[in-house]
Picture 1 (cartoon, rainbow over the protein chains, first blue to last red):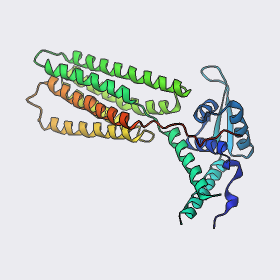
Picture 2 (picture 1 turned 30 degrees about the horizontal axis):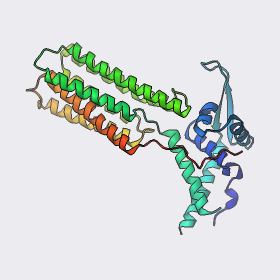
Picture 3 (picture 1 turned 180 degrees about the vertical axis):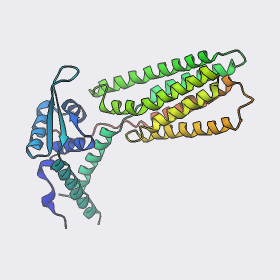
Picture 4 (picture 1 turned 90 degrees about the vertical axis):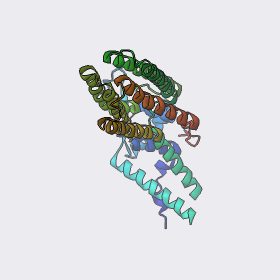
Length: 101
Length: 215
């Protein structure tokens, strides 16, 4: 029996799911790299990142001393964010398996 | 949630993860340019092998081919990054350079040493082939399959040539002829096959329409 309560509503939204997916591939991502990879507007991306940060899934660190002199913010998955993402994947896989039966 | 919707979500996740982690360090057009240059130089040197070709001259000519092919490759990678609105020195490129440079530098120094200090052009070519194969294999963690196969092909070719070289299979060949044929068949033909395979398959993934940006 699938526990649908594990299907995290915060992650389930496709924009945030895309962000969580990219964050899961590396230790950290710069804001600009996330923006370029997802082709999102600044406002959209910031809104999603704030929602994920508020849920405790994403940590952020401001770097003020970049080579080009522009401050950059780096984002990373927290431990709880990584666990929530893995749980979300497991529920998806269970749903897909159930559909195959 | 319907199972088809779940499968679609999983497909989006997989596609994004692949795009985020796969980096092609050698573009197909650059490989084709490098292949044609290598074949042309190898043919010229093998043809002219009766004439005296100094080891320094041999090394300089092949470094020139490497420089031109690298310049073409970096130009194409830069154009691609501009088209995608990405930074040229992307995390993927940094990772690729960190993996490729150590074996390339080691092979370069060892090969040039063999050529200039001992006049051993054949062994110089074998070292370059082996270390180039090792460099490509070092990117296996994030490179597409075609690059891994190219690295494997260079490694196998280099090892077979090294065994044959030590067994004296090329002892009746001149150093220039042997080295030129080794370089032509590997850097020329293998890159040509790679360029044709990648060009025909057009591996570049298209933008994923399933990624929505609504808040």
